[in-house]
Image (tube, rainbow, N blue to C red):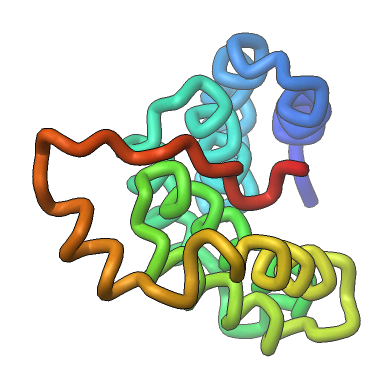
Length: 153
């Protein structure tokens, strides 16, 4: 069961109305504090606002609340969401690992397919030379080129 406030907050996140989602989520989370979905939606809203460190904290809370019997779609979704946050933080190596887990978790589902598309489309600019990029980009005077975010096209 998902309280109305969590469902509405999810819809607001889908509309990119993150301020409204952030206002609704505490109400829904008070009604059902053990619902991992509330923390996942909070992570989405925070990511939408560019607050990646708090989004990552919400994902950690999400992971701690997920039951062992979670279905494949939901498990893959959590990994995909974490990958998006990590990619925005430019932690591409761990973002890739999360996408690979999402793909393995639900290979034929919509999240698995989205993970596959992101991995394939981003292979050209991120994944092949991660170790080299760290060495090259460690010089703080160099600016990194803008990269498309995980999950956006």
